Image (cartoon, rainbow, N blue to C red):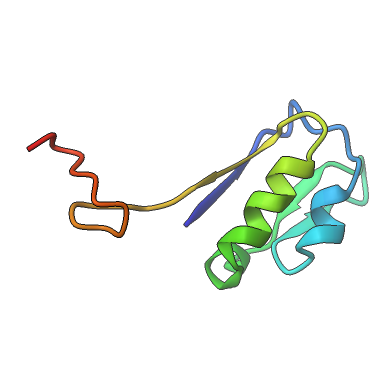
Length: 79
């Protein structure tokens, strides 16, 4: 699982930090979101998606690393 933050879109509301403090932090300088190293690998997908959904500016995106034969049955190669 990969989490990305767009600090240009972040408004510093802190919803992500309150939702998943093991993954998100805020800069003491400007209050913008920071990712804690290694936090996303240990967090539950549902918690990360909730944090992304609560972000008022949509600055957080969650990507699932999926390959052929994963649970959704989709074949990215289209075969």
